[in-house]
Length: 429
Image (cartoon, rainbow, N blue to C red):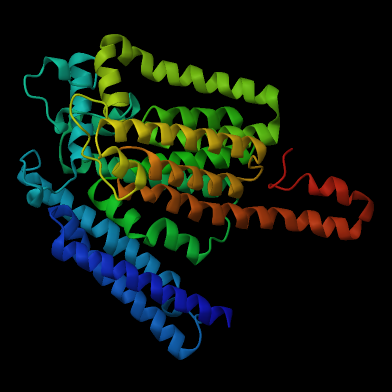
């Protein structure tokens, strides 16, 4: 019965994803989106048809052809890697910087990050001096921290299609998730977790046309995995990298610190915080010194909707809709965001995560809440909570696997049962 219920959910998921991809292929104004939609829609339709076949035939076991992982792999290949390859090649036409989104083979964040690397090499800062421009426009902005520039350095130094920043983002995302799974002793990840983290159109589309958010998410997951393996200093380094890439992920960083506090106590948290602040300062202060005004304009004011040019980030979420009503609405949206942040901090302090799965779940929740209330957000940022919730399912599998030997030991030696529980991955040491 459970198997059939899973397959019905699979059908629903792939049908919804296929509808999104087909609609994107037909109606999107962006060339890269349409290319992605054409390939991904085939993978999603196959996934739905495959699940229907398994449901009719009565079983999802019996070889790779009947595996529910088969369409997941097809989405990863045909819906992510293939369109990325096509877009990397078509980008050689050199029309990305034209004001014609129907010709873009990469989204603006890709060109902007690659430009920031060239600026860093030439001027010592990755940021354009907006105040010096007679007619500044949105593509003059680089709303990222200095670490994001690293992904553009290969293209700035070497050139060529294989140095496309999206490839660098993909490599980091895959590598950080692989290391995280290794730290968790390679748990048997559920297909449903893959649906959230990989199959989702938000992940697949981002992988093909942009990518920076996936690299950030990979670092967040790795920081959580390091924390549950008691490697707190390295976890602090990962979150320092995250906030030095993009401040959007800051709420999730707070969750990681709450996880460390719950597991290790105040003395360790103080040392971890010192590592975090030291690494963050080392990564940001050199750029801040070169041109402090530009740093604040690009990294803080522009994403907050307070820059010289308005952020184009738009969404149907309440914070953005309220901010669009005018200056008073923008102020109200900021107050709403502040109240939400305070409420989330109180929640995390009163009910801190003590396991990796709880940390990933709560990180997804706080990011989703933040996206709802901030003045400038995109619906595509929902990739953060979806992937983190998928990661939470993988952490949960690892925690259950780690608890089984302790349970068996408790049965053989009842007097040791209290000590055995403390050794679980899900409990603080």
